[in-house]
Image (cartoon, rainbow, N blue to C red):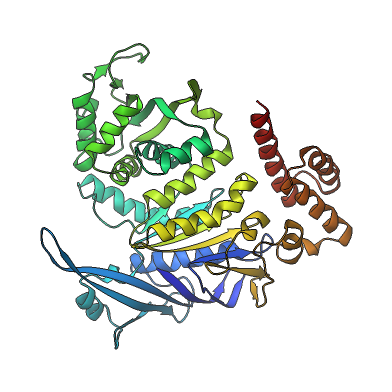
Length: 497
């Protein structure tokens, strides 16, 4: 999946707007209100209209490329594949008009849905396998775009069809717990080390999650309120390896024996406790892989059953609760989980300021980790469109693998200065819009961020106090500096201890 060109006639700040994407990782920068997020929203809206067969919300032309693999013949020992590289153009003349399609495959151009369907067996084959949307905060616009797709999924899942395509995945805070459970079920690979390094989680002592009676319930809690399909299979399996369901007015599982405990309260809530890492591995192994477990847990959320989860971890022999995790640790886990658990054959990632709460050293490694993922998973064709305010992220964005574009007032600045490997001061001045301030403030901000980058904590804190007094605590640069100083102080304290 690779979007190569986008034209928008009129969407928010974007007027007669054109942008080209040359690499699999494209980074968009600019001051708040420059149009970065509007680009991501417009792309999501276009694909949403296509999947729902709706008229366009604005005039546009979107061009992208896909790699499609089809199994022609398969035996017990061999498989024969055909790989197609196609170009797709979707367009609409103006607002409230029908969408037009062109599919360039081999030496043909297919322009009507029937011929496209005949050639690829499904019209949806020419669309992204899934679009993963992550905002550091909530986006009501993106949530509204994704809601009708989740409603379709909920109905399909209740009917027992869990294998249908999920075109949109919009991250919401409640999904963090589901992502974390799924990552904790990884027994091998780099995920256990990742969790130990980033969140200081060596293993779990217990996981407790709560389910509520859904609006569609047609039975009692003892029968999972009439759930069907994979949800029923999942709960039946937990019931088969745990203690019998306990119906009680007061819930207190402390001290009760068993590795899986299922309790119900007034037929309204189910409380399920998984005790020990090995038991979680057993559950994941039953469902073959981590992605399958994630899909089932996510189905509980989409289907209106999920309430929340609580965790007790063990790190170096000491117990810790989920609440100990910082926002940066949570954000790092979310991004890793989305990349590992949700990626499909042709995936488009729309990330809006994913580095907001990340430790500066994690920001520096952000692009490198994405590149590493794409190199390891070459069978997956993914594109990442990322907005950021982080100079650390840009300094390690390898030009061969990524490109950076600057927006000002809804327009692309055609000449982008070199950024890879440059110092924070230069990036702030030349790329991040700091030059909009007067020269004295620009120089002081550059000094502050360079002190943070050089890990001179005391001097950075002194400079921070001066600048926060000057600019105010709600200034975007001050907020970023505070996050980075907090992380630096935490890292130094841990080293000293």
